[in-house]
Length: 94
Image 1 (cartoon, rainbow, N blue to C red):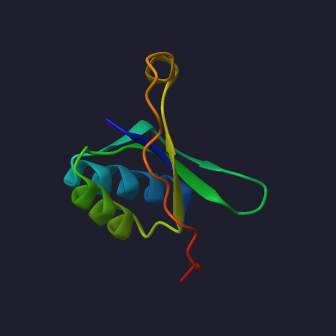
Image 2: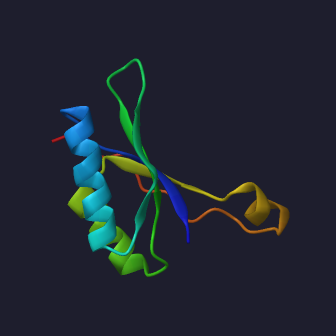
């Protein structure tokens, strides 16, 4: 399952985390460790394990209201020579 850091809107944090987890489940994805993360600049990020189907994954990004996303591989995948999935271009916040 591909992993992505997804930049999203968030407020209030705990309710948004639960909402994000539910949206992920509806799209066959998973919010990793059932958590969203914050930086000092009011950025909100979710580490999401996406479904393999690209169209479903893009639908998930729309449902999450994602600004941008960065494709990742884990350490085992990297050791096997796998490359990260595509990242999404930064988009203007709504």
